[in-house]
Image (tube, rainbow, N blue to C red; front, side, top):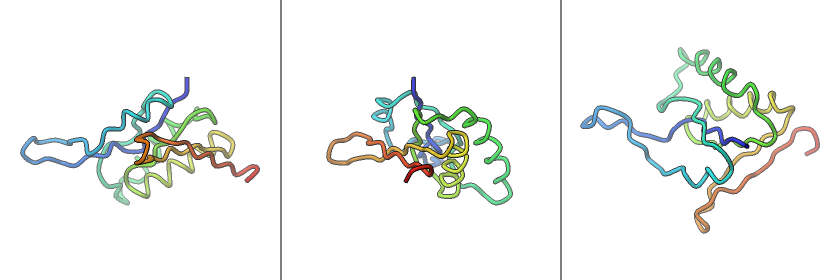
Length: 115
């Protein structure tokens, strides 16, 4: 079964609840596979970049051309996840993009091997 790797859970910190609260419902992406969250919510700070890269390497080590990335979160985290996934899959990554008209996620396959 394919997987949908979500770079970061889109959430905001709620002081009254004392924790992170989801911003969006990502469940429509599950039609493309099992949802797997890669990084916790929040900014990727320079001092923590190495930790984030280590986690991405670990979680995406067996990323394949059948899997997908849902590019939500910190732009640095998204770029790093695409780079790591591309290396793991031999240069092919499928990104999911939300279509507001249909309420679904559409895959956009990008391959460095053949354009």
